[in-house]
Image 1 (cartoon, rainbow, N blue to C red):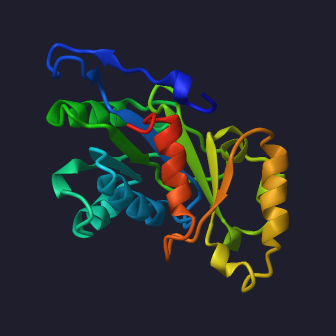
Image 2 (tube, helix red, strand yellow):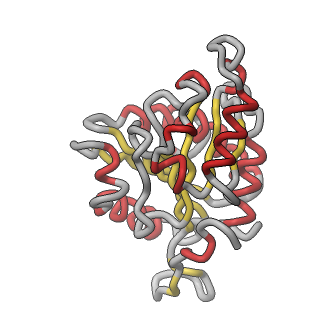
Image 3 (tube, rainbow, N blue to C red):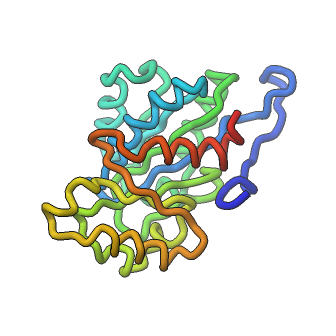
Length: 223
């Protein structure tokens, strides 16, 4: 299986039901400030719940829990299933260089919810060089948006190149910001040979079903 499937780190544990792998699959969502990470998260949550997936969320912010509070207030998921990590430093530090805080939060959710299938880990907003440690996640998405310019793929940022799934968001804005969306998508595919690129409008949910299907197939094995 392409992408992160061969990295899944589940092992059995004595405190979990018989036959249950230890630990939910962990999927990271990264990207620059304003690209639509939280909006994507808000679209993903009800779709996974509707398909019977036991889900929880971790959000990362610099010195606040703003994104976590937004998700808790949304009514999309039980508030206690949303944990906040305050990084206190550059957001990518807590997902790449030293993911200790996020690992501890994920382990806490695993202990609290033994039947958990999936933990979505949203990074704080960061630059195009941001990436996730594979000690933290099994698979990760990187979200860019057309309002940031159609030259983003050509800049070949580490997030764009290395993520398992690249999401081009806010496709509805292309004509308003003079972005050539077909070229942007084509160039994104060119710098990521063999790796998937999907387009979304998270304001309406357009394209999000394809993101769910990709995660279900490559991470959850459609369970």
